[in-house]
Length: 257
Image (cartoon, rainbow, N blue to C red; front, side, top):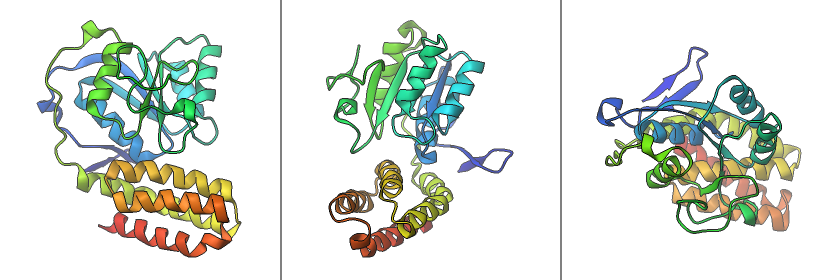
């Protein structure tokens, strides 16, 4: 089920009943991502792991405002976001004297320095070094085991038990519902970029959708998204118009399923 805030926007997904997750830990974590589905999933994963207070922000500007008002134990942020990306958010936090550990989340086609096969940093699986200044880097979609290692590595490990990681209770329907809620905005942005031949905007939105489709487990659409991004880079938007329409139809079907 997708919960809604008072303003009518979708809140977090009920992936795990809090009564089944065992102990709760008094930590505060900020999740920053311009993709609503990514925010929902990561926040619910952290809550399932026992994190009592998880806040979310859609971009670096909103995240900075929250961080200046609250004291966070950890920030997990996407790198590529409008208004203010992850690297700029990290710099702004440090400028304001905030030393909170910041973890970079990365998906396909991020800069090479931001890629890793898992968690890269102290107490985590091997991989490339995180971008300068970040405590670690995670490759999307995040696994529960990766997130628990982050909590142990970058927040006082003694505050977390060794309890079994809870298994999410089949969130497929809820995840698709969240995708459907966001799809109208995504489709509008894609069609606007297509009409104006704005390759940068189109590729940026496809990048976001690739991450969302990966989290949904929609391999066909995810692979189509990869091929479409490659085609646009090589041949341009006008030569890819038919493929863009096909991708839009495929994603619309996912939102309806």
